[in-house]
Length: 620
Image 1: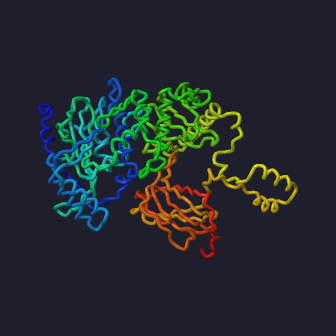
Image 2: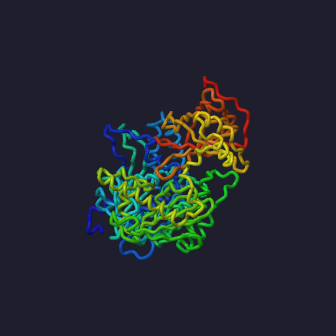
Image 3: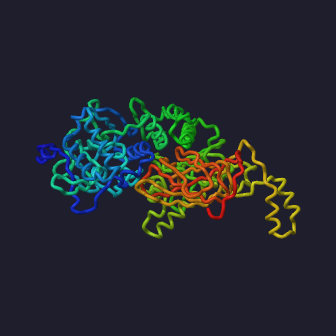
């Protein structure tokens, strides 16, 4: 290659190079790209890297794309340009020593780089195209999209599952050094590698501020055209990409969490034969889906740091696997008929398949996916009287492309508002609304029994009076022809006694959340207690369009003169005792998320403990 391209000699000389910011914006530690995946880092690392690998599949490849996650460690001397990089970390520390979080992060980074050995995670894919464009380094190439561009969403193929957008930032979130190396052999045999460190702005030796991103590259900040020998047990022989996460975060049960993330996000892709995944010495294939799914824990053990929803999700993964593998006797399979939905938008018969099953305690949601087989989200909003779950797989490219256009950058929601054209947005809203209506009709037609045909609207039962059916009938009979005011006061006398076995109640709540310090994750929740309760549980979630994620509470306290007592907080839940009716309560709390967000609150009363709590005074 050097004979054909003499300049290649210069592309073998690497070093750490920091672009100057030219008196521009300074980048701090809480930059959005570094924190946006903090809550479920392993989940998104697996999701984003595998998605990119599936999209980079070679046209001439036979068999499934293979993605491998392997952990190993290296002596510190093998870290490219280690002494220069250590100097850069020291400058990051000194230039930002007024920022406590920055001081702590770079003090830790210096400990890691000075240690005798360094932990590394290698993520490799096979039967893929590699990082094409590394030789030229032009904007818009696969190499530039993954390594150099920020804030762009580089579309890789017209039927791709995603794009090189903000999701690639999760790689750096898994590194205590905020550093990764991207190595590749493309389909033409060009081998290249580049190091990227997402740090903070710092002053260099000439007292100039940098942009915060540092590259291990040639003098022009382009890829080094050479073999990257980091893992002593690995040498690439075919096209593909290798990502080396340097200074891997110590995460308890990392391999098991990766296996769970694979099954959660790519169960369909593996079942379709599009993907196989290696994690350490374990290999997840279509033939081993059942083995790994059934190995997920579904009961929360004592001392577990996971929220209860984690185990509910595991139970649903197992059910999805049984449905796909034909092990669910209650499962029904429905092929889309264009006459029922799709003809208006050009979707033919068989463009999608719906899998449905019934069962006690199922989540009443449908997992949505396109042909590549990656989980997008779980569609909610179905009849509350039917315990069911389902999978909706869009198989045909035209339908897949139509819905791909309205995906948000994180690929976990459909939002017609992402389209710039008003007419296109209107049509997309109709298309999506029509699909939701179709799915609801199929759930009713396939699963609803005659006894359930009169079930009330979803969620309405939470707001109806809690009264005995016979008592209601007798009360109404007595009140025929009487004034409405009298009826209103008398109906309060026929309240039902709570059954001890089901003595918790999800109560409607008027609440307001105020951000006190975004960079610290500090918020204040204010609300008025709807009734007196001996014990209340508040559950906090980050709200999304189709799904919500539980927050992780770091601190919680009551402020003001609230008639309530803070019992404890754990996971995403705050427990209050002796809550007075009408009390104005101000809850200050800190979460492990440092950006503006929408929060969702569940207010759950424990009616089994009804103490004599005095009503709140007007001055509270």
